Image (cartoon, rainbow, N blue to C red; front, side, top):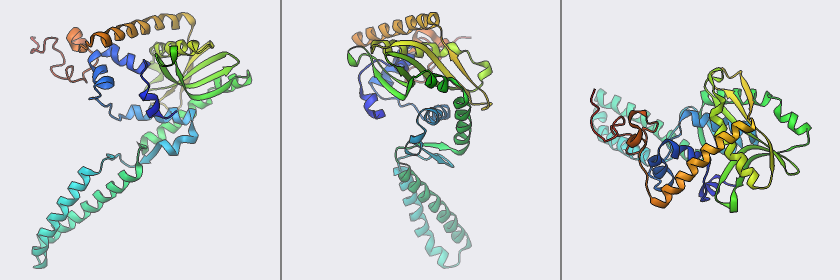
Length: 311
């Protein structure tokens, strides 16, 4: 299933629930109003690339491209700059013909910049929809992925007769109430094992419980599809060391506790959809908010009532 097709499915998903729990207003602006678009931050690019390298390495060239620097896929701004430089060069041509050294140097510098801009335009057009990955991220992500692939879990499950389905899209109850993309879903008859690929900056400081909610939600969706889920794992690679990776198995008690919290968030989100109420995180948390991103939490971010903070 294409990513665009998946995103068009009207259903609850863990990323949305996590966003809503952080800030209902951000959820509204990101998923309903669509006025906020998540930027391609380095850690997102890193994680997406590692996911691809571990689960679907054959799609690497279709989805990613290694670049010296990222450029905007839109070329309009670059083309306007080129047009401006061309006009400036033409204006200085008259002075240059009379031997004006300043004009000659000005033309040379502008011509050099013009070549750079035109190269950026060609690169932007050539990249298309591919995710641009700077060289440092590209190399480090490959190293992290290799360490994750060294973990024995994959081969252990294959030896037990499980069949691995990478990037498996599943819909929950009645087809579209819940949805999820499971990095690696291992199936044998009607039994399943769920594996999610993760990266963290420093594995030795990681609290693996931060992944319990997502795995619990995936387990819930897989069970809605008629499978008995035997185990849920997170395979985590270290972005800092890049020579460390660990798999974590989540107990039934941990997953049940995490699922209760996720479903509670889902229930509150349903209420917000019915009432069209989208308060900002700062309106009820003040400086303890975690959003700082939506149109309201980013303005006077420490003030519940949007007033100066009195010290």
